[in-house]
Amino acid sequence: MKIKLQILSLTALAMLMASCSQQQPQARKPVSYSSGTFLRESVERNKKLIASEEDKIDSIIKSEPANKYYSSSKGYWYTYHIRNEKDTLRPKRGDIAYFDYEVSDLDGNVIYSEVQLKPQTYYVDKQNIMMGLRDGIKLMRKNERVTFLFPSHIAYGYHGDNNRIGHNEPLMCTVTLHDFEPEPKVADQPDSPQPTSSE
Image (cartoon, rainbow, N blue to C red; front, side, top):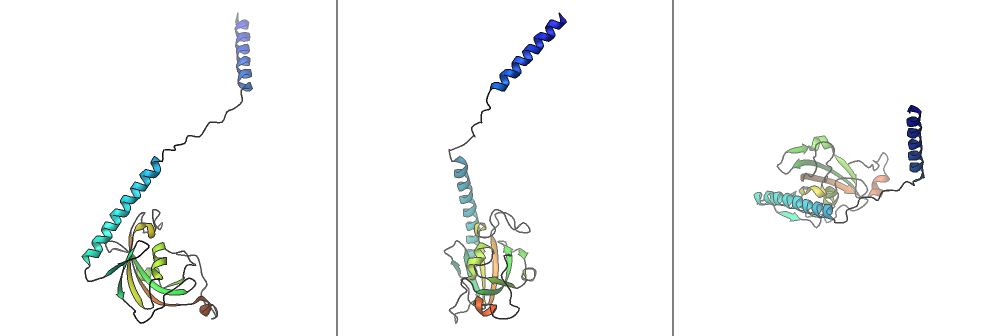
């Protein structure tokens, strides 16, 4: 009886293994959602974020009636502290700009001071810097001091700077453009700085 039970068990096991080995593995179809719900929700979330940041920027502008703020075509605002109406030239692609700047949150709390950031040498549109600052410098003339109010999407965006600037943080940057010159003029001089891809 014991032998018959063992033979029956082995036969059943062999039949099970044989039936499993004959089946071809089938790939599972991926789960996809074509409803667009995630994208719609993301768009709505971003619209609300931008609206709240713009409301805060608008309240800053209204709280400083002595300063005239200008709206840029890129979605940020700026005001002049020192304006140079004599010069007409502005930095353009390939120029080398020499500037200092300070970064604060919209409450005026300094995140990075001018001393911490040190004087900057920037090859216009050839180096990677904050998107808003990249555009703002091209609006300035020599010896001007300007405060920019950047919504988070043209500052450091969702990611932040991995240090002191958090995600989705709108920023206030005060920039002093000391000078700028065409790239070839500086390249002819010995020991001239070369462009790097730092921020």
